[in-house]
Length: 536
Image (cartoon, helix red, strand yellow):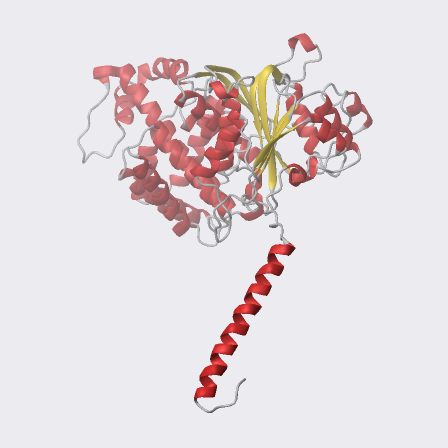
C-alpha cells in the first residue's frame, strides 16, 4: 500500500468518526473508534496465526458464507479447542474466541443483531482476563459500552454500535490492511482526535513534526552526531509517553537507518492514554516482549524497575524522549529532597514540575545516552530553585543544545516551547543555541513545521552549524556572564540589524536633490516666460 493509500485510509476512518460521533465529544468517541480498530488488528493477527498452525485443517469458505472459518473449525473440533487455545497463548500470547473475532462482530453489526453489545463486552473481558500475557490486562477497561453517551437504553446503544462497527468494517474493506497500515491509520486518527479535543490533547499527543525532531536527535551518536545514527539503541524511555507516538518514532528512525532497537519503555499516568499506548505499540508490530508500558506517576517514581537505590544496578537508557505536561503543579515533600533523582540538584518549585521531570530522565540517562525533552521557555530563565538547578546542570556540562520552537504548534497550548538536549558526557564545552521561532508555516488553528524546517533544525544540531540569526555556539564564559540565563534571544537574535546611516553621504544627497530642484524650476520658468506667464 502506498503512502497516499495509507493516508486515504486514515481520512476515510476519520470521516466515519466525524460523521458518526454526533453530539459526543471527540475525546469520548476516540476510545470507541480506536478500540474497534484495535480489535480488527488483534483478530487479523490471531486468524493469520491460527491459519498457519492449523494448516490444511483451516476451513476454506465460500464468499457467500459469512461465518468465521475459526467458528467452523471450533464446532467441528470441540475436543481439540483447549489444546489449540493453549498453543495460541504460547504463540501470540492471547486468545479470541470465534464469536468475538472482528469478522463475527462485523457480521452481527451488518445484520443489526440485538446481542452485539453483550457479545462485545464478553469479548473485551475475555481478551483482558484470559490472555497469557499481562500486556492485555485492563486493555479495554476504559471502554464503557453501557454509557448513556451511546444511547439512553440498551436497544439504542446496541443500534448505535451496530452502525459504527458496520461503517468501520465497510471503510476498512476498501483497503488491503496490514500491521503498519493499521498502525499508521491509528496514528492518523489519534492526531485528528487531538486536533478536535482542544486542551485535553496535550495529555496524549505530540505533533508529528516535533516528535520527528526529538526522535532524529536521540537516534544520532551522542558524542559524534555528525557520524549519523547509532547502529543500536538497547533501551529507550519516554516517562510521559501519552499514546506512545514518540517512542514509535524513535524506533522508526533507527530501523530506517538500518539499525536495531532493544526494548521500549514508557510510563503514563492517565489510564485511558496508557491503554492507547499499549494498543499503539501492538498495532505497529512491536511484540509484547519488545515493550513495557507502566501505568503510574513519574514524579512519585512508582515503577519498581526504576526505583532501585543501588546506583550500580539502576536502569540506564541509551535514549530518552519526553513531552511532559508544561508547568505542572506538584506537591514535593521534605522526603523528596533526599530522593536520589533530586538530591544533588534540589527540588523544582511547587508551581512548575518541569525540572523535576527533567531530573527524573537525566538520572536514568546512560553515560553515552541522549535525552531530548520538550519544556516551556520559562525553564530557561526563571529564578529561584529553577535557577539553581539550571546553573548546576550547566556547570556539570549536561546541557548540550537549546532549541527554540515557534508558538502555537500544539493543540493544547499556544505558547512557544523549547527542546533541551542533555547528555551525561558531552564532547563540546559550549552550548549550541538554535532559534527556530520564526521558521514555520502559518495555519488557521495551529502553526506547523514542514520537512525543510525539521531538516534544518536536525542538521544544525547534527553538524553544530552556526548561521546568522538562527544558530550559534555559545561559550560557558558568556553564559556565566549572563547569570546562567538561557533565554535564547540573548544569544541568537532574529532581529534584522538596522543599517548604519552615513550622515555626510545623506547631506551630500540632499544638496544634490536641491540642486536638481533648482535647475528644474529655472527650466520651467524659462518656458513660462516664453508663454508670457509669470514665473513660480
